[in-house]
Image (tube, rainbow, N blue to C red):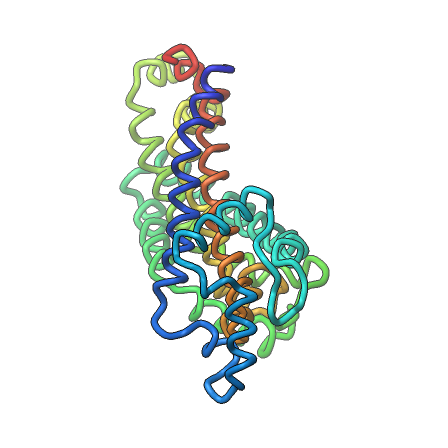
Length: 307
């Protein structure tokens, strides 16, 4: 287990370096002078030079890159121009809200998709199977920027059941979680179905049926346990995707998380904050993938034996 963990962490280092380098380059490749974008073209030249010196933009690109890497290693993402606070402190303050929304979306996706996938696999080619797969296709096709306002119109404005926006109790979490988790539920239900269909053809499933076990026990206790690897993979990958996708959802529902913070940073042309938000989301994606990889060891002991 220790060798497995060390190997995965070592392989993570070049990935993290690649993410950090990509974020640095993509920000610096944006057309136009970032100082003009932040202060506006009508700003005084002295103010522009002062900000350019403060951000180190007058230095050669390799010096800026070295300074950026050094700051990231120390946890220093710079100072926000708009908030006048350390970027990392602002992001950490907003992260719990994004994490809460992401976990809410995952819970809703699992509660919908896993039972749907199990029933669809148990009743392959039935009306329920065809209907559920059609619904999952619709769910994948619905973008967040369309589904979110639709839910607000129906459940907040027309019916008055749920609040329109903001962060508060459980009622505030329902609509944004559904908006963010719908596409994940659609993908996860299809993956659960296809993974179970492969497993239920195995001999041990036939033996379980011969023992007289109920179909529900066979599907949940025996088949689902051995079909978890691809399902866990999708959950891990989608967790990172939800962090990135929360940008749109948080903006729609005025949810005070990193996604909305990123939009605010772009609107206010807060160069260091934009860079910090993008980098933080990317690093979260990488870390979640690492944790998903390590989770395989506990789900399937054969992976441990193969190391």
